[in-house]
Length: 78
Figure 1 (cartoon, helix red, strand yellow):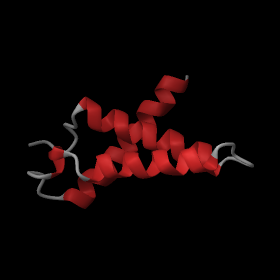
Figure 2 (cartoon, one colour):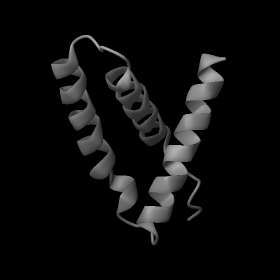
Figure 3 (cartoon, one colour):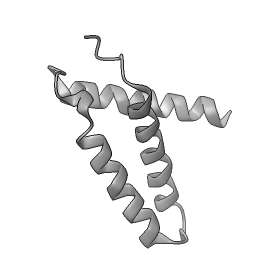
């Protein structure tokens, strides 16, 4: 299995996590409780996603996923 061959739902969840984290890190964010709850929910979905079961190098794969989601988010924003 190729480490960069992530399921679409996993990439979308990581992208949503990145966007939520950025919203929470903004200067004087609104609805901080809702953002924190969403961040926690997305984290749980990322952590327990079935994809991570057979992956031999989970930390490397998670790092690659974060990078891929950042690129995906930048392309979507452009």
